[in-house]
Amino acid sequence: MSQKALVLDEQAIGRALTRIAHQIIEKNKGIEDCVLVGIRTRGIYIAKRLALKIAQIEGSPIQVGELDITLYRDDLTKKTESQEPLVKGSDIAFDISDKKVVLVDDVLYTGRTVRAGLDALMDLGRPASIQLAVLVDRGHRELPIRADYVGKNIPTSSNEKIVVELLEVDKVDQVSIYDK
Image 1 (tube, rainbow, N blue to C red):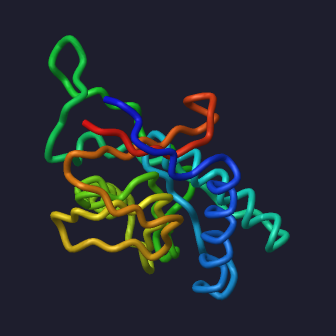
Image 2 (image 1 turned 30 degrees about the horizontal axis):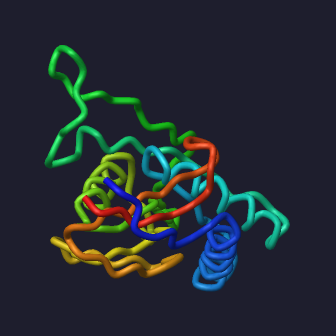
Image 3 (image 1 turned 180 degrees about the vertical axis):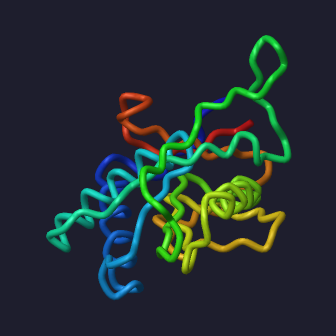
């Protein structure tokens, strides 16, 4: 794979997350009964960053959970040596029932990851609503799923790949387009 273009740098990612944080607060008329749930791996770090921004704006914290959707995927790819799926586990230390859950991920592509996330959430409780926040929407949906909050729409071809790199995992904050 070769890098074709740098689409978002550290500052642009920060601006996009600030905008999403404001939109979440505005749409929900504050953060009462709101929680953020990040999809492993990078969605968790984006959710934590959003939580910090929301806390700065609102003056009070918002709860953040971590969701592992491995067993809900329809295309299990990462497996252990025993050919079992590699499950890291969810970490949601609060009840999501009757909450406004904002599901957070890095890239929205086919919609299959989000569908798996919705299934996993519904197994944990019955939220009042589920909203979706993504850093990047690249199009090419296979399922009827749309994000409520988008940092940046990046139209791509099927021969391209969006790579989100975050400080917490990759030691750099950037979003790039690569040729497959």
